[in-house]
Length: 348
Image (cartoon, rainbow, N blue to C red; front, top):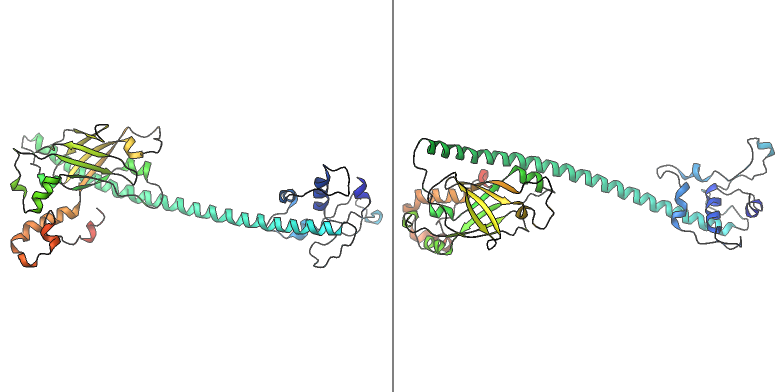
């Protein structure tokens, strides 16, 4: 026991003496109290959910269990509102007491914040898992649709029949892309971005806007196309100029992108379906590529249902439309009338 403790009744809580010794450990003069940091109170602060009374009312005392021979005074009750303790270090004691209460409030707030953050993280993980599961299921269904188109084309070729001729105008479309692997590696958060590859050619668009139909385009004069791959906001993949095939086929057609820096493989199965392989560097962009990721991601492509519905409606009703009833957008849109998208097709 040091001189300071022996000169006092040692009736303050145990935490007070511990912090006091900590504040004086670098000082030779015992009357010169050192600075106390908030973290100095952490060692013996009780559980935040419990009452302070049990923790703070335990006074420092070296006496044996025989209370009759104990000279220690009753401990100071930290929960008494008035300053009942009046010894010479009373001011410092009550100063530390307030500091300890403030520290306890801070720790309690931090604990509550941590609990909220953990709860939010758990909710987000649950949401991400649900979104990923739904996207996997949706992608699997669309991939099966493209797989059926592949099987039909394969059967046609095996039977010795000519594969379908590709409509040059159908190629000027957006094909939505589906890949389970892409979902597994890139579906993060509660939003999974739309993925598509689109093809276009300015001269072709001008012809369509002027009333051209697929009959106006001949196989003898194929038109080159350009393309764009979109897998997210940071996707950088512009397909270079290439000539599309005139007939559907299972063979891979290699096209370049980003001025020859990238190579993509495309299979045009029909006017409405394709399969495209995209390098992992495009899929992940500036993010690091996981070692387990494939070098190329295979996507099943389905032509935008809106374009398919639009072309079908136009073929059935073109002769019935009155020229005076057409709006400017109808007269200038590449495929004519702009019908409403059915609800069940809105997701494509």
